[in-house]
Image 1 (cartoon, rainbow, N blue to C red):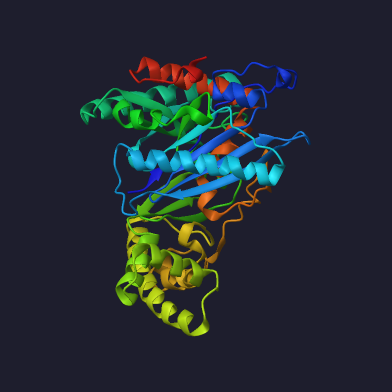
Image 2: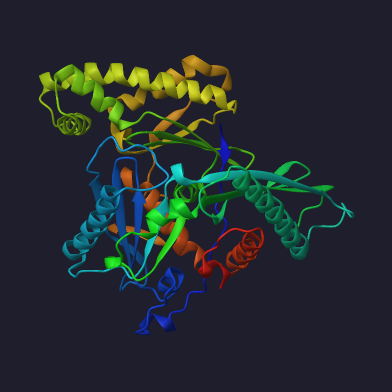
Length: 446
């Protein structure tokens, strides 16, 4: 089932004068406002990824370290709670990213706060479309009317989300993590904001991200040796941030145990589905065909993707991977067919196994199966993470596709730290969430 995901702002005012203050705010947003280094931890399905971001001497944010550590068990299943091995891998990934800063920047940069990505398996997403008929359709929508419409849309969607959480009898108290996606419509036409438009109706589609205290407690138990504070953001915000300024497109996030599919449609919405097959699918085929251990199969797959195998060995591996890719693509096509949405022509791929050469055949496979749903013949290319850079510059560390979620979350938080209007909207939504019965982080309320 497809869901709409969007990121609403959580911002603080930037202050150069506070950069030299010796005290560090207890809030991660305060750390960013004081231009102190921070880290981002992303719990993948097989690897924990981490990056460290630092405000450099050139008065710009820079990526100064990145790390990736495999879990002790490569077959870790989706769960509402993280195990000790996942926590340990996250700690080691953050330590690895920190040590990279020493070799890349000449000094050890320790993050003062950490942004923790809440895995999609732990999230509940509820989408609600609120619509209002205007009394004066010929009068342009002013700022106060737009703000009031957004407030009513938040209130309606949060009430529905709270009702769903209590009906589902989730363990622990429901926790609100933020508004993940929002889209405006005036007379059913998609607009970036209703302010300034004339029309008979205004509609706002919002999606709220929630979880339970039982699920979030396993994230809160992360060892605090690298950060004085932590903030928890939904995993989809990272992808949404990377697609925020792009035209309608389709993005494949190739994980180890699942492949996420994100569609940014022409009507301003962001839809998502996933396929429960990822990079481990190719490892199993290689293990069975060559009698390899899972760890050895992973190394062979990476060497093949990077062109480091002997020509004869590469031909043998290619024959196995092509058969595995055909089976994987069949499941992906089935998932796209159930979505029922027209597919744009711009396609991007990111994630661990997206660099396999077999990905080049995907547009033709999908076109053969559902040509009528394609706006034009698709063009697939790797998602250029450097082009997705906003307030953070990619360097001196080199980004890898597996760090796309962490990269997006870091960009999201720094960008929003300069948006006062977004901060006001976030505080309004968080107050409504608390009123609806959700546990809300105090930093969003203050």
